[in-house]
Image (tube, rainbow, N blue to C red; front, side):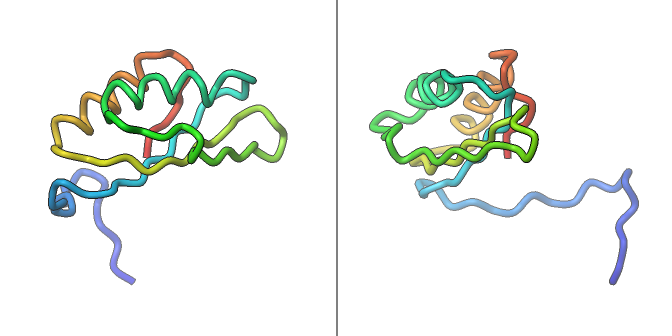
Length: 95
């Protein structure tokens, strides 16, 4: 197995838009976590169905991981979505 140094920028995978794009959002566990992130996602992905979000709790119940699939139309759309999710203060990671 070849290891890559941490300071080397690897090219990002090429995405062909439009496409169905899976995202995973990790944040602090709360009853309204899905509703909060779904509202943000819906602003960036018209027609987003929040009922399709799946939620998993961490082993100790402190964090939650929500998975959803959106219709991605551009890299700018994805970047804006990721930035707004992180700006909520409730999201630790967007994958």
